[in-house]
Image (tube, rainbow, N blue to C red; front, top):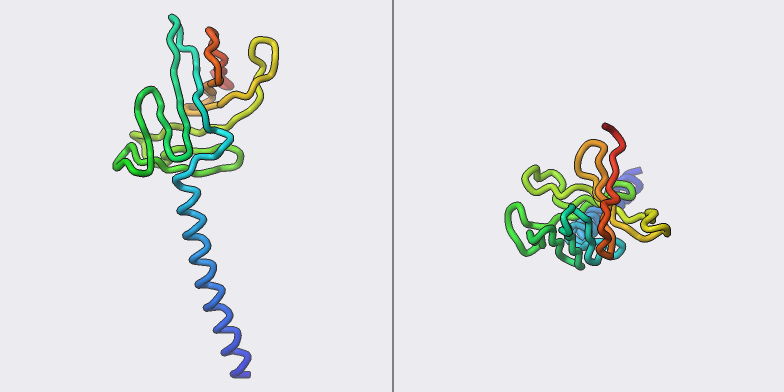
Length: 143
């Protein structure tokens, strides 16, 4: 009986150590790398011939001139997390919360094109495209 208890205790310790190291490695790699599906330069028409721009690379996000990356400190330090099909950038930091993002096909100029959807406030979705269109495709769910 003591041998079985010793074997079980040893097994639990080994599995606990392995589980702790795997979760640390997975968390470190996913918290600074942006997903491939979101990468690229995205544009949203803001009116009067002007555009809001988001540029997402492997380890950085530039939003209207502000750069967020893992090498920065404070509010501009990039943190990536996933919730369902949505990705959050700098979630939990109220001053630098960039919102939640995902890509989806949207009807633009008569055909479905890949777009970046940004959710930042209650019921409002901002739609960004890879090309500059002089029309804003953003939408609201709640008014």
